[in-house]
Structures are given as C-alpha cells and as structure tokens.
Image 1 (cartoon, rainbow, N blue to C red):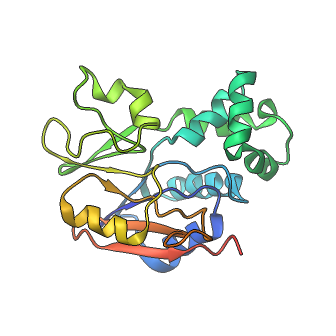
Image 2: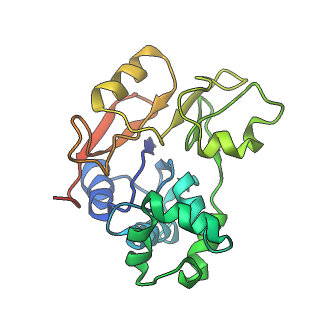
Image 3: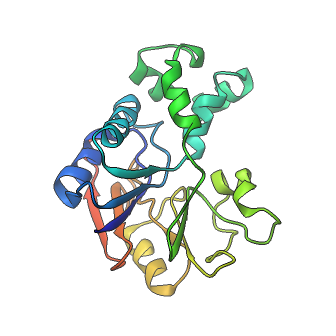
Length: 222
C-alpha cells in the first residue's frame, strides 16, 4: 500500500490525469493526498474537481485538502470584494470552465465539495497542509490564515515531530529535491501552471515512504 502526496494542479486536468493514470497508477489500497489549489489559472478547473470527485466515488482512498484558491471560489459567492480579488488571482479561467460569468452561478454542489475539504491531513509520520503550519499558536489546525496563505515563515515539523508537507509556493524541481534532502518542510508545488518559467511547469508527486518524487510535465498549456 503506497502513499502519495500531489502538489498544486491549478486547472491542469490533462496533466493531473497523466499523473494519476500513467505515472503513479495508484490502486484503491493506496493513499493519495492532494494538497489543494485545484482551480484557477489553468483551463479546466471544473474538470479537475469532477475528476477528484470521481476518484472518491470509485472507491479510491484520496484526501483532498482545501487550498487558498479553492477557498476563494467559495468566498466569491458571498462577497463581491472576495469575488473581485479571486478574479485577479486567476478566477476568470475557473468561471469560464463552468460556463458562467459570476461566482453565484457556479453550481452549489461544487462549493459544497470545497467546503467539505479539510485543511489538514495527518499520517503517522507527516502532516499535510496546503500552505504552512504554525505550531507556535495555541491551535495550529485552526489557524486558517497560515494553513491556506502563509509561505516560508513556518515550522518544518509539528508539535509531535512529524514533518510538514505542503504546496502553495512554486518551486523548481531542484528546490523540491533540496528541501526533501535537507529535512525542511517539503513543498510539492512544482509550478505546474508556469511552463514558461525556468525549472517549473510540472505536476509533482512524492512517495511518502521512499521520499522519491514523480514529475509530469504540463501538457495543458502550450
């Protein structure tokens, strides 16, 4: 039974499918932890959410953490200010994938799906979050600002000594490997949505038991 964590997808559905079905080929007995940011900037956010839902429906053991971009999609439904902010952060592509012009027209079941996503996933040896973990506050798992938005000003392990795995902050493949080897917080956001930036433009997964990474080049954006 393998365990994998997968970094930020950002609407790159074909790349996600290539990772899951061609590169990892995980089974129902494996554990797969998605680190959030399924929507925005890429062309097929709705398809990404549908695919994750299908994995769960088909009996795969997947955990889908909430990312800050996913959270913004829901917040935009209730706040014009957050909707405007979301549009500046890549939300226009997400609305286009739903074929709508405003956040309130996104089918409510997708907002419910995101609202049901946890902020933290715990394994015996790792704690997975979208962005960061601040163990110096009384309730780290309720510090939603840090869990969703903070970047490198955080802790590498939680209060029990488990190593932190996150996405959120784009890294080159070399930077990802260096972090894994150094014992610091592992960041698996390989800048999938940035294929024109040097060293980025990949979806990255990591085997939690071997610390080996699997990299798939973005095939959604040419």
